[in-house]
Amino acid sequence: MNFRWLRRISWRRRSGLSGLSIRAGNGIFPEDGSGSRTWRFRTFSGSRVDPDLRKGKNEVEESEGAQHASESGVVQWKGQGSREFFEGQCPDRGPWEQKEEQPRVGKVGCVQQDEGKAEKSHSPIVKAVAGICYINLMKLKLLWASPLPPTPSGVSDYAVEILGSLSQGVEIRVLRPPGQDEILIPEGLEVLDRIDGRRPGEILLLHLGNNTYHEWIMPLCREERAVVVMHDLVLHHLLVEHTAGRGRFGELEAALEQEYGETGRALAEGRRFGLGGRLDAFLFPALKSVVGGASAFISHSHFGVRRLKRAFPQRSCAHVPLPVADPGELDGSVIRAKMGVLKDEILLMHLGFLSREKGLATILEAVAAGRKLGLPLRLLIIGGTTDLGKAGELISALSLERVVSATGWLEKEEMMRLPAAADLGIVLREPSAGETSAAVLRFLAAGTPAAVIASHQYLEWPGEIAPRVSPGPASAADILRLLKRVCYEKKNGLWEKNCRQTRRYYLQHHRPEHATGRIVDFLSRLSF
Image (cartoon, rainbow, N blue to C red; front, side, top):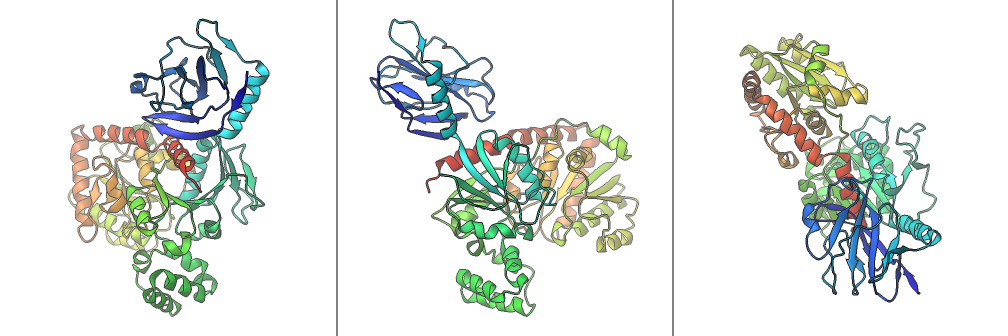
């Protein structure tokens, strides 16, 4: 009997079932097309099997507990016709029939059964060789470049939280950031100090944000098969640091002139003499100057996808919701008790870097107004620094010394746990660089609603779990109105429902496993 090897393996996600699409015989199959065939494969994602896929001409059968990624799925067809095998519905090409009996479970390979004959399997050697080829061919190959812990960056936190999940189904090599001797990443990943060569088909997965931690990644955007994950949609500051920040004003002028014409040249000339507006970088994001050579993009928001498609209409772009690690089910009352927060007090919490754009002055004004109205408010600031500087002066002027406290940066585990103690998180960023806030997601993961500025990507979260604050002069009044609502609903036992809904939303949309499946699906569909 003649056999032929599989010619193509690709990842696909169809109708809610995550796994492999296997085309033109992945493994070893007889050439004559007779008899029935069974192909066993391991699913990649933790998604549950959609019951609707169990209906129709083809059937996806679950083996013992095949609800999760670590267990096996079975796809069966019987009869002659096109040898295209899919995880869900199969193209209607030929007399496909459903085979009812359950084959042996737990072997990766192919089993043939002729009409009226007992089932027989290939020899162990043939199955072993087929299994090895299957494993080697199926995996994507990635070369990962991003800031890495212990660098104090949201992108470095993102990297370590998703690499563990992504490495379970993908062959990943990680580039070490220049000059960083210590990196904290999951065990078992190959680390490179520089790119000495690329593996066949290897995709360069780059992560860019708008600060100097990403400067070393900029030249890699011009490499072949470079896919950029855009953590910020404004890269003007990064371009300025890379050029004018190193005394290369000519490079900045050339880049901005090429992208924006005479306006860009004038903008660069003004910066040479220290002239410029606060919004210049946001109005001229310099996307083409920094990532114009990339092959494809990933954004964490639909707003970001629209912006990127407008700038690069010929490039592929995917939406992958930003993931954060699951802190687990947390008892906020226990954490509050350890912090000395009273049960009837309303704890407002700010998480992340402190900057003018984060609106801390506006938050303080709202808290001061709430205290004058008799609301039992407290504000805890996590991140940034324990020395609040000018904000400290404002705290004193508003007589909030006993109401506001700051912790500075904490250990990551503590940063993930403390948001559960808050009644409301607050993350205001205006203007925004187009980033999806990891700080907001820390609150959602802990089951704490978080107030956000009512603009662009922040509007993509449901208002029940991410209440909106109007940008501009009305912000303080909106925050005060929201704090009064929280006080009322907490006193009457209504706020707890929002907290449960918040936690549920995180579990459905922002766990690392969800992002992993989407990334793999998108990258596997690209043709370079």
